[in-house]
Length: 433
Image 1 (tube, rainbow, N blue to C red):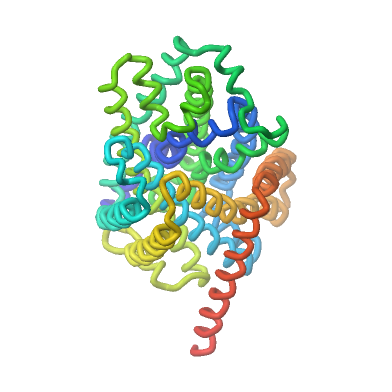
Image 2: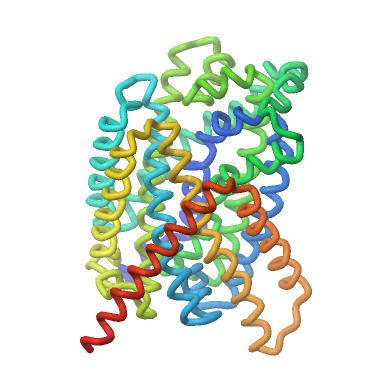
């Protein structure tokens, strides 16, 4: 009974998905999209529609599967696919986790300019990784409280921008910002897909943590769709209005876009500074949610024998403690590599976002196939499910189309190296058994 009492209800589950999406996704969007221009509003509508169908995959899976997480769904399709997809999902998320901390620190850069130095940035990220792992070991309760408070403060700032910002919105400025990329309109629309897809990475966060949710078959689907709708409205309203408030170059040069918008709305630098601080804390705090999700996903793969057994261990608080520590070591290595590359905030964010998104698309794709296979095995014919999976798959494939050749080669090489190491490690274990 006590363990059940510690689990999340509907409100907590909605906060879980909103915080994992809004906390890490929205604050970096205006600056990232400004290099292309206001035409990314078209990209936003297309990606939001695609993300909606991906969300519906997990909504439907939540009512059909005991474990609707991406790693479990991939394993349902095929054990080998489950092993690979689980690997991509877990380690794609670890790279994404690092980018979340980098985005949050970008909002602190105005207070601590030294953060744009690769060594200072790297050491700060590493310290935060281990502080938050220590917090997570105590259970989901403290995570919910911290994230709920900070994300609520973040949402107030973003919602005020999305509402009050229209007073300062200039159609002329929006038109002038339309396409500043130098690309054709078609290529400009596609160029915004990667960062926008990253903004919606997390639609499966409630499904991934279904073991921490009370009555998951009822709450997981409802929380997933409610959380998605809330975040989609916030995203579109707030980022669009900023494109009509400032020149594209000003947005691109300002890491704290929402702080800049709030400063203009209230004509106060103090308000701008306060918002920048709140945004940073909220984004960094969302790392708690994603770190927990990564460990939960790793546990699912470990339970199926696709990852080391240490990932399957849970402490007295029901947290995958050993998995959290292993992931902490891996994230530390990732950040050390970024430090050696001399990456500043913008460069480090772009690198980690691109790699993480492309890796996560593999388990996302197989999640839809799992839903169709379930229908086939149960003798159920559903045109709605077929349409949902078809449109979500087109959305996923479009992300690969939008990637540059260099980005694709980077991911291909990473996949080859990781899968080779994975095969050797587990082949060695099978031989010793």
